[in-house]
Amino acid sequence: MTGTTLYGLSACLLVGMGLYGVLAHTAPLRRVLAFNLLGAGVFLLFGVGARRGAAAGLPGDPVPQALVITGIVVAFAATALAFMLMRRLAAARAREAADASADRTGGR
Figure (cartoon, rainbow, N blue to C red):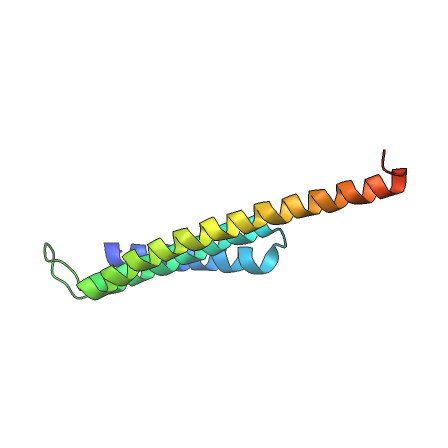
């Protein structure tokens, strides 16, 4: 088994695990983490595709490498945004619960 095949199979495994996590779990944190796993698999698959056909010691195609680097930056920003939105949603739910309990107890 060559290194390219091993990396390709690892990428497919990461994509499969990420898809399963996105589709099977309902918790937002697990979905975000599964989406990151899916993205890592896709980035690894692009990296494998960039190296395919290049002789040993020679660099691969730079265009897929640039796309992978850009994708990693975008995925990081999207993950940070998703975590921030989850924090705000949790804070809003806590405020609603506090307001509802205050209404039930008559403001005490």
